[in-house]
Image 1 (spheres, rainbow, N blue to C red):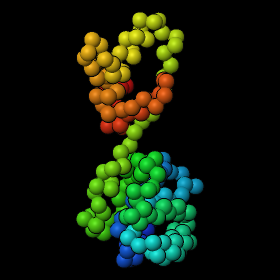
Image 2 (tube, rainbow, N blue to C red; image 1 turned 90 degrees about the vertical axis):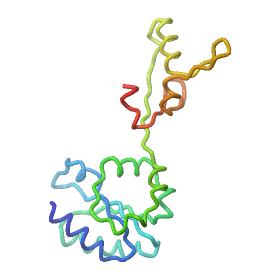
Image 3 (cartoon, one colour; image 1 turned 45 degrees about the horizontal axis):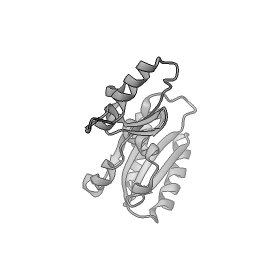
Image 4 (cartoon, rainbow, N blue to C red; image 1 turned 60 degrees about the vertical axis):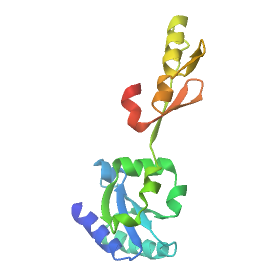
Length: 175
């Protein structure tokens, strides 16, 4: 498999405007089977490069005998890309090729932060436990003083009753 990935990286790196090739999905997680495709995130500087990349991918598919699923984005499109996709890529991705790290604006990459959504139900708890839970989790004001709840302290937010969203890096504080 390493030989195949090296070939993919080598061939795609020949395209001048390709800045990064990142493997993600089952292959990157080590959960691939003989039927798994190769999921690639390809970052380029120009929109017009996409056809050249697609042509190269078709050529590579016939050479290696596997389907390749490329997700191609320009640096400008990166800000509009689905954050769920980017979260998967940043969490599990393996960089196969990186032309010049300084060409990728780190500010754009750093804006893509993974979040977790938790849903919970406290209706079956006794009333005093519900109150204790809500006081610890949510911000409240008592006697003119404002107390931060755990959710505010870790940068999370309430989405609806029984549903909160927290930054992935704060996962251990909630669980």
